[in-house]
Image (cartoon, rainbow, N blue to C red; front, side):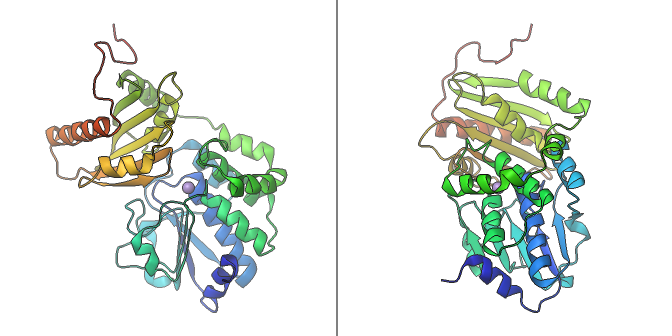
Length: 340
Ligand SMILES: [Mn+2]
């Protein structure tokens, strides 16, 4: 079989207008991959590539990433899909619920490292590698295969995408991820990377973090945090990562409301479990979700529900989750922070 990087390039052929769609509330992996595709099509076809995203760029780190590395991204609501002859999706797939591409549109190119979705098979080019720790790893292979010079900016973006998705190569990283690391690391701009990793963070973030901790309950090796209303949907994932660091904790589930949706984030360090499958099972019939071995997420549409009904949905999710991970019984004092 022809190398995927070469098939990708030949697929574009004479087509002129290229759109790359990132997943909603884009993370560094999807942003870096969009920048990599932009770079590939610029080198191979001299094409201008438009990058778009759904939701918001919530984390200060991610806003800093697009700003410092000059990755121009526009909100998907400003896109008219008829203006484009090639539509690409990176780090997400059609029908997964975490991107804003209309259902009737079949993307031409899908590159991802989540589990293969049946809709994706209809796409003329798809390269799905669930064993990879990041989609940035796949894009790094393409750039090397095509012998395209990876400049400091792009190397820094891909490196950051790889490191955040694999939690510093500790989560779901394999040989290809290590190879990408070895290739990218000597090429990054360390000061720029440091400014991306350590941006100033708004006060509201700390307040929400405090809320999240105060509203956390422990059940055996599980912590569940009901975070209430969020002004940034990414904070549920950050809280889930943070709480998983507690001694003797092997699962975290964080829930928060963002606009009309309940946002869910799941993390595990338990061996032999797949967080993505647990999340799918938890949200079965209620919403969409998915993810990886150790990290997963999902959402439930709350539009039109009363506050009471929203609470019921949340309780149902928590109940199912605890049953699945078998941590039903609780001790008498199970708040992680005692409130005097
Ligand atoms: Mn990813």
